[in-house]
Length: 283
Image (cartoon, rainbow, N blue to C red):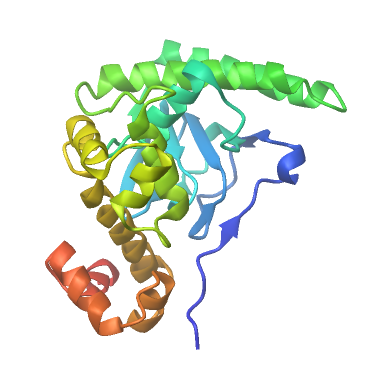
């Protein structure tokens, strides 16, 4: 019997509503939601309150004012105090272009960056105002002006990326709109389960495998082949810790038909067996 799948939330309203704003309002008691993931992006603005935000395998403290970003496919759970106040922007991946798209890639695709960024009060006020302008536009018309909403969203992401670079100097990889490294990471996110050869991604980008490996290593400090294996390992860890699957089920979910091979591969990558890894997180 298959283990329970990690719930995947779709964007409310479907593709007809590519961007949405939700509010986190104070409650009478602390709140803890269930582990889940999304098929869309989320930007959390925490203005007041405290708590913890589990994103994939790490639990981040919520220390307002702060911005947290959650990429599609990431597993997360928010535990919040009763006095928490915040805004959440939900959006698909095809609503941005130009510099805003580069900032989106920097925040959501940059390899190894933290998903949590502290904000000064004045910067939170600036970000809050941008999201409220988005909210007002979305609520004002039966058919919102998508270009206006996306313009506000683009400015928000540009600002968040700028503040993140200042806070995490040297840790964020700047990924321009036409950067082949950014395009490689986007392709990888969509195809890592079925395509694991660097040659496939290099071909999609009209590059040789050696050229792509060199570009990725220069930007991210690891070769493209290593990044592919790391992305597969991350998915394995998500399923082991949060999915309730057996080792065999995780292997099959990763398109590895031999569970013994999966165990050997996992040990080589992580230095421990899948069972030992899961037991460590569930202890």
